[in-house]
Length: 235
Image 1 (cartoon, rainbow, N blue to C red):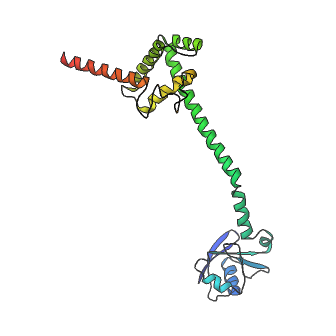
Image 2: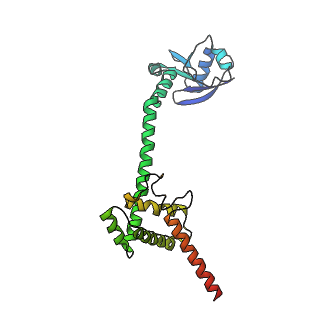
Image 3: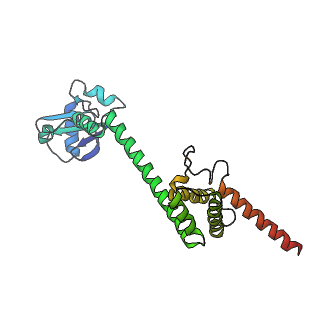
């Protein structure tokens, strides 16, 4: 019969012809290069339970026996496999309350950090566009003075941003692109945010419905280009 045996850091198959603890120990130590069985030797199964001579035969006949660990001398001064296993589990398993609390905090911090990063990137994009485009600084000035934008100023801002968006991303920009511009508007101008919407910028672009000031302006641009193409064909 072949038995999986672990001695120290090594693990090997040991062949035994007699199902007794004495025969097993002799064969095992010989297999591991130890000519004589040392004193004070104990055998443990995978659960850390000691296997003595009375139950050895029953244990090794069990198909689920797994690996038998031999300990002797100084090894026995350390914790048994069971104690080590339990200690290892304890060290890896924090209390339910602390684990849940820590996991929740990490998730919230990650989500918050990501949102802040996306807001900052979008804010810089919109601010750069408005500063560089004609009439853009007037929009920023009006907001800084009134904490709002009049209808005409808002339309001018939307026109500038939609024109830049289609110039850089084509006349059919992706949802992610349109959301970034909308996010940037309320990140740069917080008082323009809609407190009753999920993200605060859906009135500029709502990815679920495909509506909003930016979406409508882009559709106007698309219709204008289509009209120009038809006119060129007719000519």
